Amino acid sequence: SQQGEEDPQALSIQEGENATMNCSYKTSINNLQWYRQNSGRGLVHLILIRSNEREKHSGRLRVTLDTSKKSSSLLITASRAADTASYFCARAHRGGSEKLVFGKGTKLTVNP
Amino acid sequence: EAQVTQNPRYLITVTGKKLTVTCSQNMNHEYMSWYRQDPGLGLRQIYYSMNVEVTDKGDVPEGYKVSRKEKRNFPLILESPSPNQTSLYFCASSFLADIKETQYFGPGTRLLVL
Image (cartoon, rainbow over all chains, first blue to last red; front, side, top):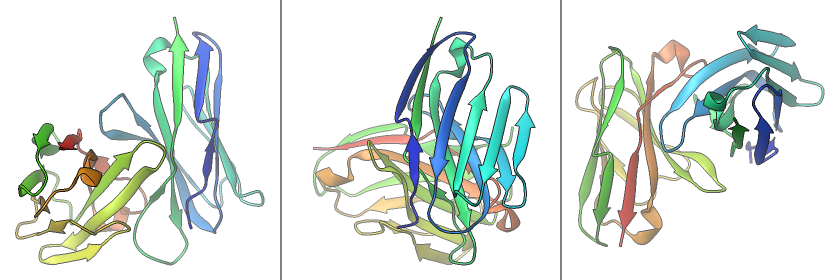
């Protein structure tokens, strides 16, 4: 299976704290992306990191990629209640079919 | 506004009663795709289309049909729904060059099959 693991499955923090979510995968990738999903809504693309990049920033988001460990982390700094959502990593694997493979997600709750 | 729309947003039906979930995008995207989302299983691809009249199976196509007669529309058809098709369904689209870069998702259709 090309599916990897995301951990933790659920994360509950206080407003102002940082939230870190991890994603691991099994086969080589072209890029890895993070999406956000508010409860029962569609996914929204947050950030993409390519296989030759190690770190990327976008506002309060920081993504790292370690291809030797086949893992990525999404850090949300200074979290807000509005960050409460599920976060998914999606991998674009090298070769193979034209599709993204989504993980099972991390459900983040930011308490005010 | 650039968007992917799905209808209906919520649907309760009974086993065996044919239904269609519509998906439409106004971004002139060639690629469209259907996913289902189930607790503990994440998103799984049902069918996808690279362009008009070109469709292909994803990872979980059984029990579903699709068609792509127009570029903007990609309906999902359940000919004889069963309770195991109770799920949250998402349509997504992108330009061909962006399939592995960014996909735009619809708001979802929550289906309950009794």
